[in-house]
Image 1 (tube, rainbow, N blue to C red):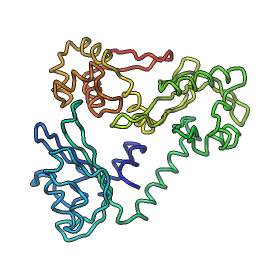
Image 2: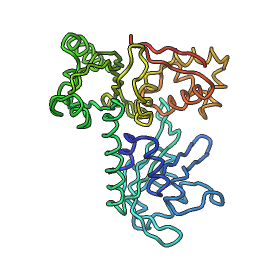
Image 3: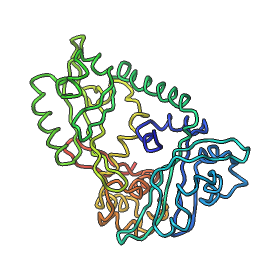
Image 4: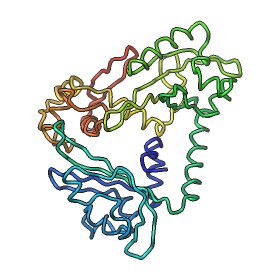
Length: 346
């Protein structure tokens, strides 16, 4: 397991992992020179937050001398070279030795100029402790469908829908059947239409949203909202679909709480569908200039301009920063059933 694997878990679980001193993240803007560490990264390195300046050199200096070559030097990073993944030994100031799995990613301009680098680290010294935490999180996620009729799923290039076993239990189908064709849960008279539209949207790498009635193992029929959203890596590579299904009243409101913690990954995927015209509309509702958005999101003016000209890839972190800044100011991007995104101010 490496730090990238943690992205599929809920924010609460990530907070627990960071608070346990098992994970942390860092960022370095090469343009401004600013460097930021998460509180978990300080704990991971065995450092106090306040008297310590966050610098990449300090982090690398704590790495065992025999392992430092596995991480790019500060000068190599400035020249655009990073070590994407590495397993290194870290010696804390207390003398405690830990083994870290480190992942780093470089951010570049359209011309290829290095703009910044970000990274995350996971303590894999005590793999059994981490395994127990992951198992507990998986049990919580699996139990969600039994209590709320809400489930997340992932559909990768292998075209297998990754659902938990509880979904099969609730609907009285085998897990193999559901993973091969989740539309078997939909009542026959609505099944083919939803199946056709779902696969059409997947093939187009587009967002899918719809409602359909599904039969439970008890014989009860409930209406569910189905959502599927394409997922892109920060480098712009298509990864597949992430999605959610949950029971709703005829009014469209959820029957039960949908498990907001499970929606973190889905929300990020939805944000990747926000395009330049959505950002311009949001700025218009707030009467913001591009400069205002850049300052609110911690972005450069040129980055905001590229976002609004659709010059950044779908998975760019800058898109999430811009959306977060707009959301903080009261903007909401609402996914509609016809595939469009509505922009509103609350």
